[in-house]
Length: 286
Image (cartoon, rainbow, N blue to C red):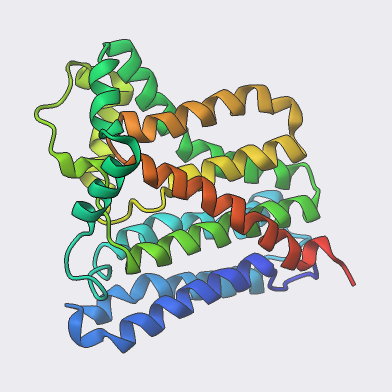
């Protein structure tokens, strides 16, 4: 990677934001306050360009870390943005269809039965803890790989991570599905006063985007993190592996996703990961 140059992750970020900008501009007549909605995309492009211009490979560690992990900081505003543009193709949420599919596959609703069958407070708290680890797993592995000074491994991981997340976000625009929260299953559980259950309830109330359930980006990204942990930080897999399995289970238990969202998340990573690694120039130097 040349000093003060753009890398494959930067180009991937430009591509996603360019597609969303084109989508919003094309359908702006159907999107209230569309001119404000494109600000996150413009800011993301500008920040990546600015950081690439002013922070070179010889800069201090902290600026370099910020420059290289910056795309991860855009995930949340991009995710929130989806809630304002995901009714262009389908004006209504597609949950009735997905609930029928779930019933046809399993004969019951796993998100309902699972939580009712294992309703103990300690199980609920552990499941919410596992779900919350998502917010540390993917940036944590990125920081670890960068600090280990193995640029091909870092760019391998970061490109696959960002590209997979962007595919999930684009899918949410086309297929708005709320997930198992659409069941509206009564009051908060007794464990709601416990720290991780309460924290996730706050995050869901204030930061969740309706219609961003299929495929589960939590599952897609967590399984991708596990793959790269085994590949580049195998000694940590004994910790990350159980956390990822618990996180995947928690997506259904905590009623954030249907089971088919989970299957789709796993399939997303299984299909896309080999593609990303095949086209990533960091793995195929000239």
